[in-house]
Image 1 (cartoon, rainbow, N blue to C red):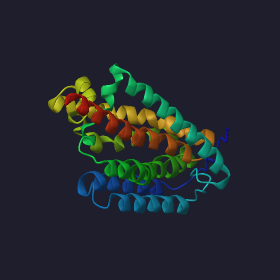
Image 2 (spheres, rainbow, N blue to C red; image 1 turned 180 degrees about the horizontal axis):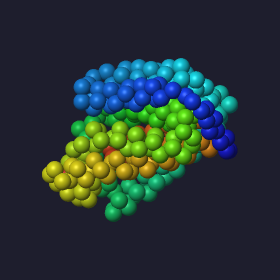
Image 3 (cartoon, rainbow, N blue to C red; image 1 turned 90 degrees about the horizontal axis):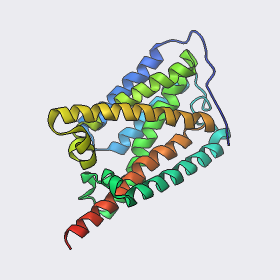
Image 4 (cartoon, one colour; image 1 turned 90 degrees about the vertical axis):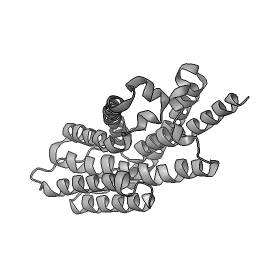
Length: 250
């Protein structure tokens, strides 16, 4: 079901609301990753998502412009469900193949209980990470950019911002994921390469997220893809690490 929706360009819009949105996003990124990365994370994420939506509405964006219109609800759910099913299949195949299985071995999952996994995959990821990032990048920022500069620049700038958003959380990830560490190496050089790789891959993934938002007319579609990538990734990683440890103790 195609429900292509692009915000209409409006000449002469002021620049300061867009700069305000970018400033809020910088603040929340620093707060979540450096000031209080685990403390009241869901509260911070929800609160800032509401603030960003309020700025978008005050800027003149409609709910439809921001991918939250009622007419696109069903297409968004359909596309999001298809994305979840497709990613689950890819992860299942990848986890069964020896060459790709180690990519799921995120050592942050090693000490996580089943209850902790459920909280992280089903509550923290969708209501924290996915909700905030999709509202920020594919809803508010994209709509405000498209209304000022058109579709192409909206895609380019929002994807670049999405890549830069992952600088702080990607620091040190090469030490927690053996597959990533084997690619980028160790030490400071490995850390720099891991950050650059994260910025590039997430920036490029933003193109896919925006594509889903456009064809469905709803941010629910990229939300489904985003949650499946993270939430199912944690679940598969958690299971595979336990299978690995169980095999090692036999």
